[in-house]
Image (cartoon, rainbow, N blue to C red; front, side, top):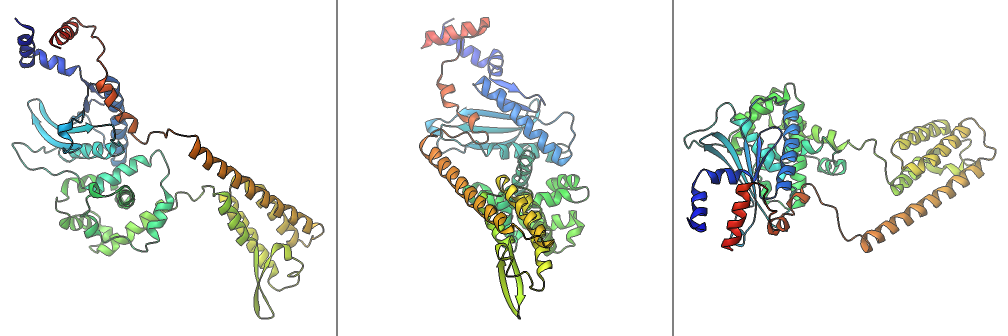
Length: 429
């Protein structure tokens, strides 16, 4: 038999299935089957997918035995495929049973940060139809985008703090978006900045739903009952959560409260040196009424307000402000704040001897700290701009540097059949 004919026979016969399986890896949970030519990559991805699965199932309180498998095929994008979708997910009925198929096209410029969302979407599809899978060409619906994005962000927040500044910015808008219109948004059409805002709103909404009594169970029920058309989604939400009381305005209120909780995530985070110094300026001022006129004094002017009524209350207020400031203060400023607390205590006890020198020393120390932190910031800016040329990979990006591995020659096989096929391939070339 000629080599070309023999290879054609392999492509048609059962042995081709054996050869194809050498390009796939199964995750530890047995739910993910990753198909990819690069062995190291597919094994890494299988482990990452299991981590996403663990985070999602933990958020939803899911404990499963055998699961509907998710096949993830990762392949290099070819020139003829440049107009094809980067991601393609579908429900399949195979001879061995139902499965979810996720196809990924990869090129050098591809960013991998969206991979987690697609894995979450695939897992939610298996949860939605695990008890009643569609068969015989029946229509099926994927999980709504807001639920996928919100749960993906919740999984990320298991390992890091939320961006409290972003959530405070959303709260400053005074009102959440109109839910009926917001549900119609397709995240795939958003730029990176707008997508971050959408994801934050989605996380707040999901956090509210999960935080209600029996929240995870109700979210799973929402997953199964939410209609494909967003127009009918609000009615289903109101029915699932009686606290909404049939009034969308109540849902907006709970949504805002959920965002407020996320915005307070950095309640105990340290401020920058500039923020600490600015807050210290405000905390050290006394606002008193002198002869019916409101006046503001600095702590250094203690001789001018020594006999002004209300002095004791104003000093007590400064002590409270300094105590609160010490929680957020930049670490280098904490000794300065402690020094001011001591100075205020001396004023409260009437011990003013040597206080002017003490306050002058603290003021000089603040000037030195401000200059030192400014110098450090300038140096880091210069170093980043002139020295650092390679930035670290973002989430999942390192898993998508595939083109070199696809172009690299495949290592010789150690199996007899593999060695024979390598020889046939070399002869055909």
